[in-house]
Image 1: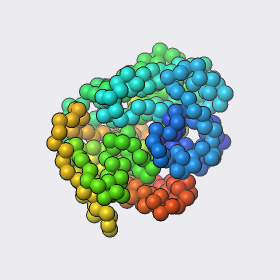
Image 2: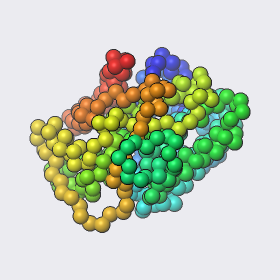
Image 3: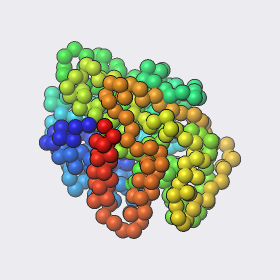
Image 4: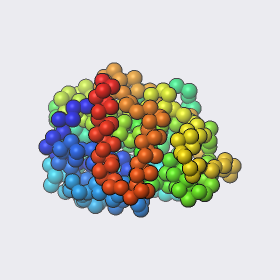
Length: 357
């Protein structure tokens, strides 16, 4: 990733008030980009967006990606060169409770951003972030490749597979004959990091339980997920956008930005690893044996394509990712300036990435 590349670039981010969108917005601000965000109000209270004061260095527009005219107007006014589409209903269990909202946001919201981009001549690169769960899950022990079929058992996973198909249709129909716009999709693993207060996510649930010293119910302790720190896939999105800017035809595809093979660990392994890092307030948990909505048990991503074609690879191993997440949480609980702390974590991550190369 060329950190100088982003200086004075105009960037439009949907979902900037969310966890990943907030970290991406802050990172691009730190790189000197002119950032405009479009999203609903922060989905949690507290939120990374508010605690890290993300709005300080950007234009923040509160809006709904399901409202096409509002979204198109925001894009026209900001005249971006780059669009990162992260706005989504991002929780599996919530999709069982609210399937209509899940599909309308994740599918039609994606169609709206692509349709709007057709009329914005300034745009050169669009990165639509979907999910590792977009694939038809066969409970394989090997990682899913970008060429594997889309699918999804539950409404959330299926909506992300549908979003992938919508992006492919728009790319083939409207952006394949010299328009100068690169359209790509990006699929990350189970992202962790400081400032995530979402419900029904493992790390936020564990940290809440540790803080209150309450017992936490674990639905599927044997489930294996590709855990990664939020900055790792975000670095992939940035590298992908840079590559598209130069050669849109070569990089307008789907891309996996997951952890290394060793980053795929069971839920119980993650809990025990966190407990070993904690000096006090250990996590107390039990297996919730109640019947639960279906969730995949085994999920990994193959990142060979990103390694070979983008020269991208994860920077942090699973233990480093967990440590960084716990550090952020502890510093927040101690009352620190979390914008400064978050920017420091970003800067340190950049140094690690450069040293690794």
